[in-house]
Length: 196
Image 1 (cartoon, rainbow, N blue to C red):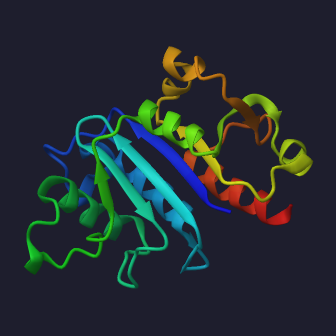
Image 2 (image 1 turned 180 degrees about the vertical axis):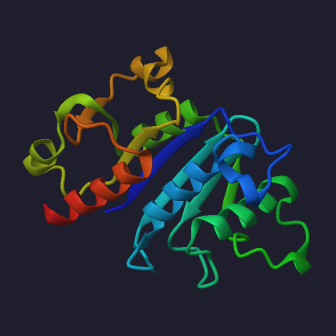
């Protein structure tokens, strides 16, 4: 089973970013880094068959695949942010840079093109919010061993209301009535899928 998370950001702006004030200076790239770590790691070890696709409006699309990352990949938010910002701004052109994110992929594909491609390739694609079908009940029916894509949304919550996304008629799942941080949503999905 392959598990893919999709997260989107229209707020990230790195023109004045500084590690000393990551949330205030970067348009909340710290949120994206927290989600990346939540997706890729379990007990400081890489998960198997997990990807997180990070769509950043101003900078492109970045694909983190747990199968391709090396042991030097950062395990904490600040280090990941430092290297991710460097990668976004300078790419992988400087070999001497030794950026541990050198194995991530970039693509020009839009978020909606990617979702449609996943659907065409047989993935089950889900959105998540409090009003959806019960996650555990839905997955227990017969969705355990399939390849899944979970659209987590963005920091503002606006992405889930976009007409293009709603027009895809994706199954909407709920982890409960409580609203969770995006990184917590990712961890909860992984935990609940393990229990099935």
